[in-house]
Image (tube, rainbow, N blue to C red; front, side, top):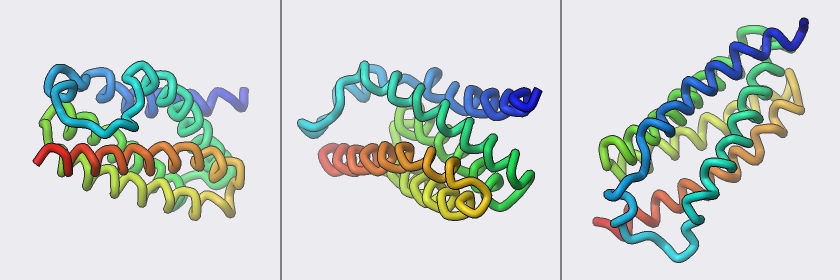
Length: 149
């Protein structure tokens, strides 16, 4: 019965991730100059699936330990930044805007890790792969922005 409270977190993450499914890279992105270290396209889906599961569990753990808290508010904020990135990059073709969004997302992830720590160290640790991936994604976004003035 306790795990029933996980459902809203899974649904929130699934709803947020729908922007990534709706705004696809498409021919515009494929035509952009990209660095040699750009991962193959097939890697993004499985990587994000794992991250989305970790994001949902981390939010749920914070909710279970602290209810509505600053950490949970930041968890919600990072969902918004995460959802906005695909819209900015693939929907609006705004590489610079997406870069600013990924920087804000990175800060929100880092803030969640810090704020969640007193409530659930596990939740904070579950966000470390997310922080690493967004760090890499930010470097990729920045490089694509520089290569495509």
